[in-house]
Image 1: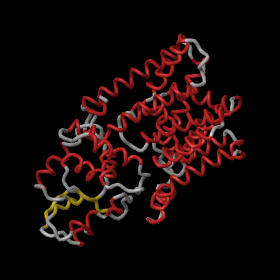
Image 2 (image 1 turned 180 degrees about the vertical axis):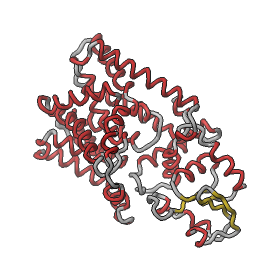
Image 3 (image 1 turned 180 degrees about the horizontal axis):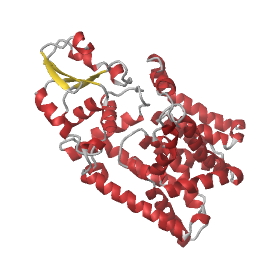
Length: 420
């Protein structure tokens, strides 16, 4: 909660805040779950100060992370009910040590991006899947279907989690209840699929086609160091070792979890051949990583625990640095408002038309609640602003136009001003 209050808003969070202000069944970049979260946070918290404004974007994320941690723990403890209290306590400390040592898992405990709800629904999915394997009940079938829908409403990478789970347990393809869960997920997803159809499938086109770029070896070379930043080097090495072992010798749940862990690493390593791979794209596999590592007694040697403890300490230091907002503005992690103060003074309350990235208009609207829109230049990537077309509402009105870091005022905004 302290990080949610004091860590400066990220530009992407400001963008997703706009999702919540313009509710819909889908958005250009992502499914709508993150927009629902920012909308609920904004409804619950009055943005009367900058700290509360941060929380008005992040409150539901904080609650979702607490629920994520609890659901993962219930997934673990449900398989260890025969252990005595002392062993259960030790298991809990192991669980907390693993979870707290993974930087990106901790970041999505307070930062509102599509990965925050994805982690929650992935945790719910693995909880339901493990109980489904044990009970084969209709209750778990329904929960499995709803959790799959929740993952898909959060981020399209959910398809990879579901597919790798099946790849680790082919018997699911012969089970009627497993197909019933898929049917439930498909029905729940219909509004979003209709939105994609009505808007000519912009998200699928963007992620599957438009994001591909010319290959450079750096994309591949940076992959493993980026994964260390997601999981920490100790967990990353352990999870690959344990994932491979579970694929070879684990039960149905272990094989699926191991396949998800290893499969996501291999898949995105190969994806680096077609463009830059964002480090956090693999973060959903943190859920099976936490489950398997917590339950693996062979790794709980003193040296491993000390190494993970060091990682926890580094994560805590990073959190403090973020809360102090002492990093340079160029990092995008602190002191961003100062970049917009002069622009706000020049605009004198008029709407601003930005060019270039979606980040400046999103941040400007977050800090000052003034109208700001984006007009795409040739060669810039498409964003949700192209679907909203908010600039049309400003035609014929006084406005400021910011192009190439220069600002000029027009008494009546015209189509020509938008095209220049």
